[in-house]
Length: 105
Image 1: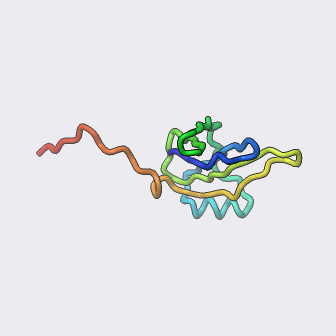
Image 2: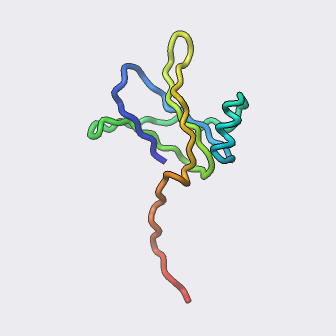
Image 3: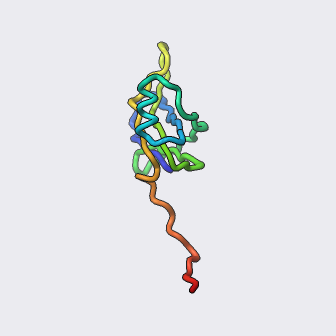
């Protein structure tokens, strides 16, 4: 799954994410209640695209339940985080088309 954002920034942003094997409604509800749910994903290597003025990050391996995504910037008072986005790849990711498929009767 590729995540992209505009690269017009005045400081270095870090892309962060967590995943959990629960529906997004459950993850968001537990997160709002202050419960620590899900596992942090590995650090994402950001790729700049000068052509379309965006940065992107690829999440692998792709899990099929819920992801919590946010951007974070360091400050002298501690990290500043964007509002998180909760999503299920099943709702957004388009799989590769099948290859070498044939019908057997």
